[in-house]
Length: 168
Image 1 (tube, one colour):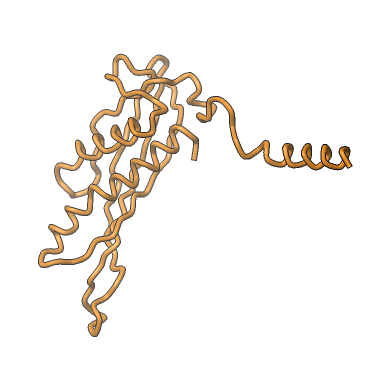
Image 2: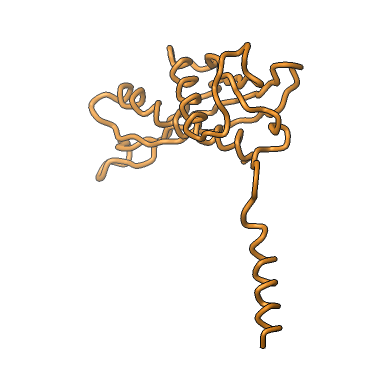
């Protein structure tokens, strides 16, 4: 009876050992990096004056994650360069009784990133993240979209911080 319990306990321990990681969970290419710098983002869209807001949102997401600290470019271990590639709005819900009028939109922002090691200039990571949010149309579509943009940036920034700290 004791042997069966011991065997079951060993089997459960072995099965659950892959569910938790002890120690550093950073991606292998980011193991030696402790501080990051996030300069002002590049903007390839026609939306004006959003570069600083995007960089600030990314910095806040990295600080909230807590894996890396933020520092100036000349003092950081790596630099995270970001580019706002696209902002796309698509209809999500139509007005009841009028399928041609839209009452809710989905806003998608695509952000490309490259993480470069400060010392050697070696590229550590690169890729893209997509931030999503939805917004309802009020009297002015353009104002509603501008007000929803920080939420889409925040979604993308949280995804980027997760990629930097966990690899996915």
